[in-house]
Amino acid sequence: MLLSKVNFTYACLSLLVLVGCRPDQVHHLPGTKQIAEETANWEVKRIMPNDLLQATRWAGDSLTAYADTLLRRTLARELAKGGVGHAAAFCRPQAYPAVDSMARKWHANPRRAEWQPAPASATPAAVAAAGLRPDTMRLIGRPAVDTFYYQRPITLNNNVCLRCHGQPGHDLTAAEAKLLQQQYPGLRSVGRQAGQVLGAWQLTLERSGVAEFYTMKTRKKWKEHKMPKLF
Image (cartoon, rainbow, N blue to C red; front, side):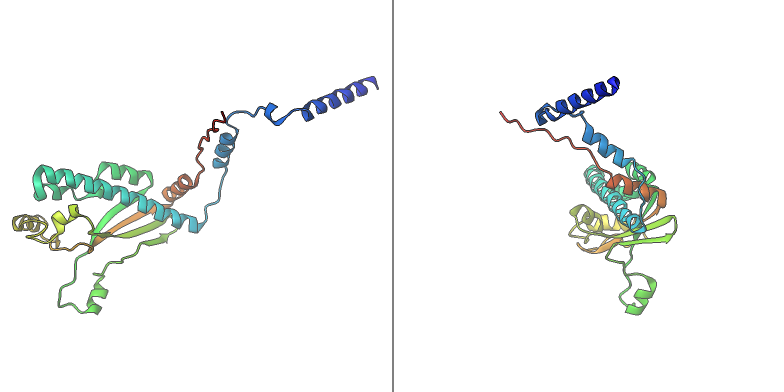
């Protein structure tokens, strides 16, 4: 009986001490919010089919934008070094080591498809049947359970690309145009105009890479919020 009274008295005193604490006297463990967010990131989350399609677009946009940026920088550098004939050999951004490394990380296989304009004598029906008119919108699909597909058009919209694909006598010399036609006889590599669709980026991605990209894109990132100085 005496022990019960002692325990009851101790509990009452502890409660009074806690009630008497002011908010400024309560010390929180450092990094509590960060720990909570990291814990939430480790929770198993169900990724829905629409989430995977959205992640396919995110991954495709990220990889192709990165590749296009490297392409412009590389071509500008090589044009300054050796002109059009020298720079044309570097117009394969899908083969750049940095792009290949990113593609491997997301289990993607990128390629650039060249669109060739139809002959002037071709009828609209023949053009459509041959698939000569490229899509001007992004295409996102899932052709198989574990395979995703991404496509977006490649548009001639900067001066660096016009140096190789533009109008002879204006964007490049007649000699440069002839050299490109000799190097790439199967393609209409010159005579294009700004804004014209040159081709399309096409990517096939494995489900594991798409799911990993979605997880990375949606995970919470800890940002430290510093308290303002009051005095």
